Length: 394
Image 1 (cartoon, rainbow, N blue to C red):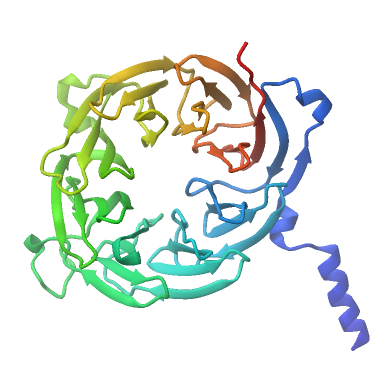
Image 2 (tube, one colour; image 1 turned 60 degrees about the vertical axis):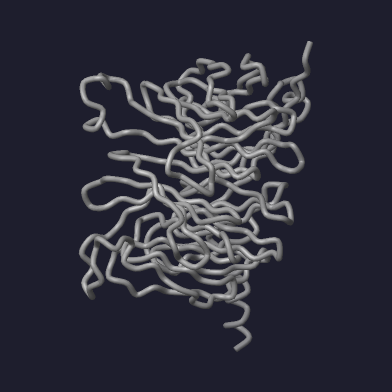
């Protein structure tokens, strides 16, 4: 018995858990790095590919989904815990609450976790439609979690209780027991007014819809034959959408360039956008982000764009080599974005370059600015960097 116990203890000490064994922390020498405008502090390797952007938890730790796991890393670069998704496919973007709960979906399973790494309740949908590889999830009006699946929109409260479902997605589908026209989804978000979703049928035609806390449509807007979409709400009653059209839908006017569009809606009525602006770029435009002074930023065609949120007018555009990531704006108004060649760019509020730094792999996900004002970057190599911006205006 004592021998068996000794062997168990030996194995636990000699062979750490898979998360600890796979990850490796590298500290960069401060003396060498301190003179760099983008100072590398540490690199945590072996984290795998992200299925959604990194977010900050209220306790200051970083949360990011990788494949079917939700990972937690502290500001010192230590991987603290992993939560395993119970559904098939990758985890979608996690949802945080003020009470310290985190919600995430994988396949058709919605789960709750705590910020100490302990799993809570789970809610499984046994529907006819096959869930997307990376499901969408939002927390919206009524303090409800909105889970869009091919056969229906499911509303679940924050303690794991079923509230209602919207099925079929549209009355034209007909109320039958058989799933005739499953839906696919490109984006969703929510505010206190509504849950917003971009959904399409098997023909690939997409709409933007707003749905209230009772599962009723408030409005719909036709988007057409698009390949990707991104949504963003503000605290002033506006909804922004960036969409990229499929090549077949662009016709001869598209040529070799991708046709894209940015919209601004009043969240209470989407019958007609407040404004829209069209773009032609060598690659697709990203999700929009809000910055200071009522400015909207996004990237596309190797350029960083700044738009006026009132009229949608382009304020400036800055070419940046192989720029691909969604941008991020710091409290000081600096904009950060990543390239497919591994560069992190820092751009001044005026649109002029401040500095750049090359990392070990493509920066495809949005950089994250922490409450400590440090920059956190994930590369396609599966590595997470912590970077300090030392730039000072001359």
